[in-house]
Amino acid sequence: MKKANFITFEGPEGAGKTTAIQAVLPFLEELTSKVVVTTREPGGNPLAEAVRDLLKEQQEPAIDARTEVLLLAASRREHVVQTILPALNNGVVVVSDRYLDSSLAYQGGGRGLGMQAVQAINDYAIENPETGQAVEPGLTIYMDLPVEIGLERVFKHRTGKIDRMDRENLDFHRRVRESYLELAAQNPERIKTVNANQPADKVLEDVKTILLENWR
Ligand SMILES: Nc1ncnc2c1ncn2[C@@H]1O[C@H](COP(=O)(O)OP(=O)(O)OP(=O)(O)O)[C@@H](O)[C@H]1O
Ligand SMILES: Cc1cn([C@H]2C[C@H](O)[C@@H](COP(=O)(O)O)O2)c(=O)[nH]c1=O
Image (tube, rainbow, N blue to C red):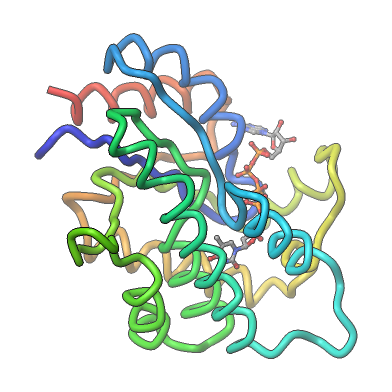
């Protein structure tokens, strides 16, 4: 496998992505001898962060599922063009807390729009304007855990606000996880699964092992 300059972290709510990314950063800088930047979705630039705020707030009437997927794809386009590509073109390693797989799992699976339809919308959003190639991560670390455990972490311990997605019902979150597991099974070369239902130091160890294996 080619050394991955674009790395994404994925998982259901409360999987520990943000915690793991922050903890692994110094290790990744040392491993790659490159500048490493972290970013997130939805977000990663001012316009996409504004979309993030919109999507996290409870909306009345409820946001239509197709509107949601289109807003996410539009914000992803900004993220790709304004943040991800300029960094990659400068030789920087980009680590994103969520990317396209989140749309496939949450909107494709969770909302029931179907992964194919969501992929098609996003093909337009993630095209590199210079090469015409899709901007895709070389490595995705999928942090897997039972949704009840992730949600318990979020509801009991999170310091930030409980948002619109967190409040979705258990079946929604189960469909999200099932979709991630399906994606991981379909893309074993790119998506590496970590058992996120372990103490944080053990999770970090497993993440480091995967990064090491993918930077040879
Ligand atoms: N391995 C772990 N065991 C127990 N608690 C953890 C673990 N990793 C993270 N946490 C805690 O769980 C909560 C969620 O962690 P974090 O924000 O890193 O997850 P996340 O995947 O980024 O969540 P989300 O996508 O929902 O924002 C935090 O309170 C964090 O301290
Ligand atoms: C990129 C992306 C995100 N989401 C959802 C998943 C989460 O509920 C929030 C992001 O916030 P977090 O702090 O990372 O939990 O947005 C989504 O539904 N679809 C997407 O494409």
